[in-house]
Image (cartoon, rainbow, N blue to C red; front, side, top):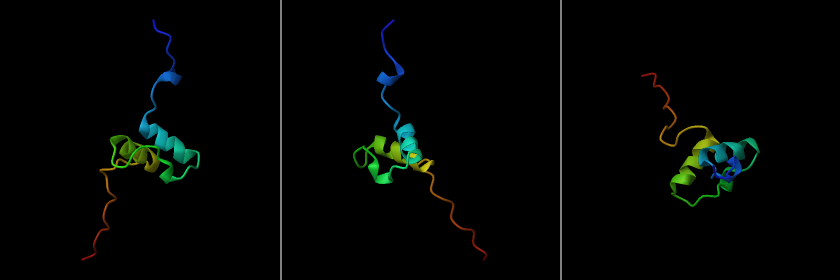
Length: 62
């Protein structure tokens, strides 16, 4: 068995983003490059919603 710990594993960008928000860090504190999959995942974690789920449009009364 190899001597690894949970602290040696790479962080999940979604969890990192959620943790950043919980700790009051600004959204622009994302450490990942623009347009990268990791940045999209980090922002999903920060916002708490998947990037491909836009808010529902308002219902029209007409």
